[in-house]
Image (tube, rainbow, N blue to C red):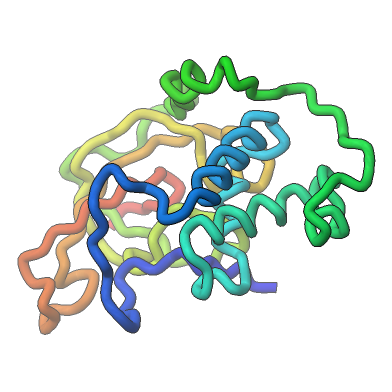
Length: 220
């Protein structure tokens, strides 16, 4: 089955318009904060990683019909079911019906502030020399992937200029498949709007910066 990311919306013409929302008000209802807390707590158990959780969200068949935190909740339920941490009947009835699975790692309430402040750095030691240098012309690879990827679809096959190297980072594509971190060089690549959407578009003169891992790129 072809992998379909419902979250890759960049560069598309979509119905409706985007509503600006005030800063500092991340939740629209009390349950949304609880969903965020549950997602962070379960992610801290190590049963999956952040890229696996992104893959779970973007492949939800009803993604477009869900609000932001409805997407998070549906993906959390999906991951819990896949790993046997809950049963379908427990979700439908809203209560525990079976003994819980033991977890080697837990995020305790007293540790939350320190863990969030520490974050999860993704930079790793380089395993090989960087292939590209700032100022070099590169092309984003145009290949159909069967897994989670962080390369926006609208830059695939397009040519840009490497602006800077960002070091080696956990490679999301491999990480999402449970294949380990496989760190790769990460670059900021600048694309011209006319290259992305055509010279006759309203994007003439627009510059778009995309952070892209080395396996996404090839010499132009």
